[in-house]
Figure 1: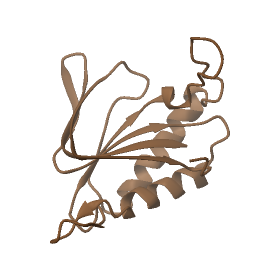
Figure 2 (figure 1 turned 135 degrees about the horizontal axis):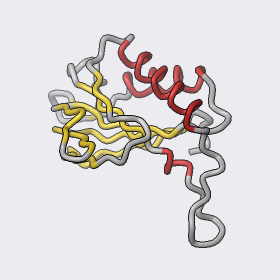
Figure 3 (figure 1 turned 90 degrees about the vertical axis):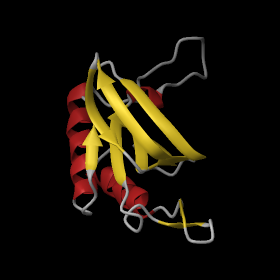
Figure 4 (figure 1 turned 135 degrees about the vertical axis):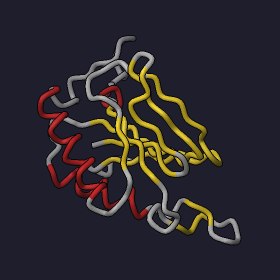
Length: 149
């Protein structure tokens, strides 16, 4: 599983003209599910994301986690995180999980985040979405459950 985590002051996701998820202070998580991913990958990423110390303390040092600042999470599925652009000009998505498997693991990941007592909003799986955010910092972190980066 791959995730792009952005610390935000606000974020929202729309399907067409309808806002389907919206948060204030917290994290926007763009999540891609790989063909080889398992529930253990979702467990790892959920725990890592909830406990990442990327929020400022009273001295402005990034030293607090999402749970310590009572932040929220907006999770948006994004299979394009598995786009392989090493050959040619059109990305290959062969490393991404098939939609049915990806949806199941995406939903499992969201449930794992909620198990930490965090308020979670989501986009709509396999829909064309527009994402709006104000990246605070800016702070953007890349995570991969296989620890390839």
